[in-house]
Image (cartoon, rainbow, N blue to C red; front, side):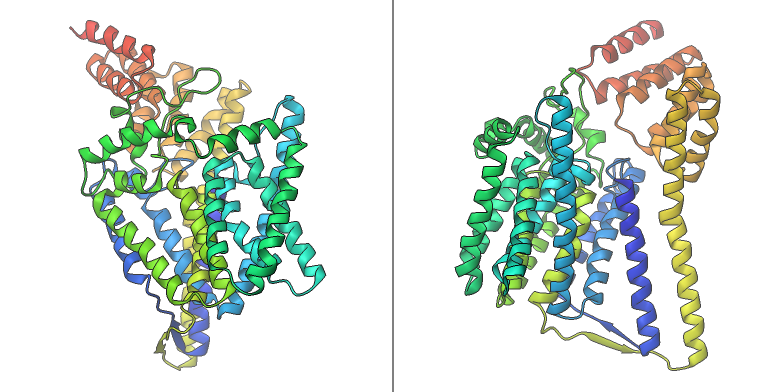
Amino acid sequence: MLPKLLVARALVCGLLGLLVVKAIVRRRLVVKRTSLELPLVAFLASAVLSTVLAYNPNVALLGTYTRYDGLLTTLTYFALFWLALQTLDGPGSARSLMRVLVASAYVVALLAVVQSVHDSALAGAFKPAFGTLGNQNVTGSFLAMVCPLAFMELATARSWGARLLGLNALVLIGAALLLTLSRSSWLGVGAAALVLAAMGRGRFERFGLAAGLAAVGAVVLMIGVGTGRVAVEQRLISALYPPAWGPRIHIWQDSVSLISSRPLAGYGPDNFGLVYPRFQTGKWAVDATGFELQIDKAHAELLQVAATQGLIGLAACLLVLIAYVRAFWRGRRSELAVALFAAWTGYEVTLQLNFTALGSAFPFWITAAAAVEVWEADARPLVLKLPAAPRLRVVAVALTAAALAALAAVAVVLPYVADLELLRSVQADFAGRRADAATPAATASALAPFESVYAVEVGNLAFERGDWAGAASAYSTAARLGTYNPRVYRNLALAERNLGRFAAALAAARQAAALDRFDPANQALVDQLDAQNS
């Protein structure tokens, strides 16, 4: 997830620089207005409030490692949306951008299909497609959003060459979507198809629907003769049967209890994993080896928002959704407008049965900007005149470039280097070269002092060396920064015990048990330390 986050931050810096330089050169700043502004500001304000009142403010601000769902990421979403909107130049520009998105989805789908076939051949059993997005549900939600746009290219094509290209894109993207086995994404693309069927008109309705059905038939035929036929059939049958959705129903029920315990402002962005174990009523996430996986998302976006931003955030989120629907209804005149609303619907339906993930969320916010550009094409922008002094403009451009370079260094370069250092440390540790692992781990922690995972690695290396004081210090730092990994607290308890600090050891052991009370080792350690303390 980190590379995707850093690409998005770099894109924000680039778009911001483009906007500022263009305004300076043209001596006027043109700001497009949209009906979504106030709802989005209300949602952002609720995120700020929940961050201030968060269970762990550091996690609320930055998010947890691999999720990065904190306030800064929410700001990145909105910045991408707003800056992309300012950059687009009418519906034609939005159409071009969506064609780029379809082309990128084609590449993602191709790699996902190849990955699934390769992994299935090696394992001798079907393996779902996830490709470069790293997770089948993330890949599925992205492809469910793009499918209506590929359908539009096919339906509105005016030559046989364009029709073949559109059909090729739709078939491959549809095949990859099926191979993800992501039921939430299937339901999302089904909802998108209903929008296209209900709102389509002209060539979009006449030619497109028939060609789309033919494309879907080709995809089903291809999957039917492949190794994934049984797996796809089973998932398709269970898609409309909620009891077969695995742990989701139980997680949703437990999430309601979590929300009711702190209903107004929630526990803070990305704090779900830190507090959910206290409300968890069963072992809902167990892998094939019997290992208990930590649950850090509500697996339903509205529940996730209510848990992290409270009912205030939930109300703001609903206002944003309503604003999107109103914007579309007012600007539903063109085929592109309908296709973009279908894309929005496909993503949102998927999201309500899953959760926001960076790999699909960043393209969604850019797509949302294109949609608003089409739906509200007649909106009048705000124009601000700037001073005409040439020297002043040169200075302004230089200062902008320097500020954006500094921002990119802090927001993009340092996190990337820190993660590379962590990788070096982990590789050296696994290779048995512990002496070589210590320096890169310390460097990673220094470059990203607010990231708990890097502090955990420093603690792990100290623990392996028997440096109990160093381990206790690093693990305590990780606990303060925010981690829902019970093994961190268990190791902290053992380190504190070996240092003779039994009260601190007992407190850490109890925290480990609170984060995973279904692991008997955690409770056994609590009982042992409790007996020693007494």
